[in-house]
Length: 226
Image (tube, rainbow, N blue to C red; front, side, top):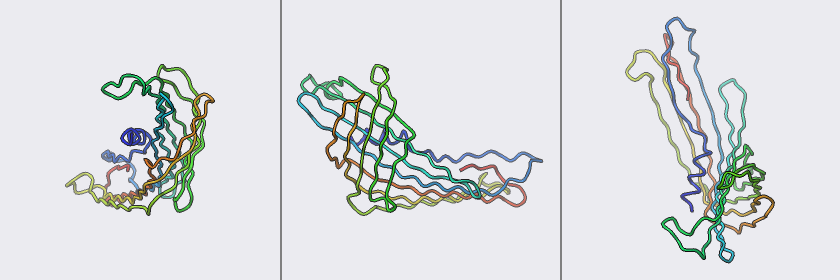
């Protein structure tokens, strides 16, 4: 289950890609550049059985703030949910018990968090589709609580673009991460049918602070976006 939760989370995590293009002769001077991103993520996987029905729910939610030097600060959220029902009284196959119903949805709702990120929650009503492509409305009301102190990680990189060129740009990137196991609980509704989700410990809270700075050579730079 945790692997599926990570796959769903990967769909909504922001991609931080470094791209570059050479400066055009005669073009205006390329300016120094800086970007800052702070994103918080919460994920959880649930599995509970009622008779022959096994319900599996995978949730991922995000809240991000990002901006460039001298520019405005932007905010963005993204929530995703995958719901599966299996017949555990049926004959299991290579991938487990047969799936009798599935639905998924995404929205731009934001994950809400406390200042120190010890708790998080999300409420959303999303338009999605079931396994046959029919429209379905999925409601989500979830809460998370960190179980331990956050584990810290740091990554720092420096580079010159283009490599071995006399003129170009110096790029410095730095990221600081926090991660803690969490407890999660809540409720999901599928076209109005409410399903209470008992507390799961297959959940986590994560935060990433990302900083990128580009310093151009005074006699000719390189167009870098990070």
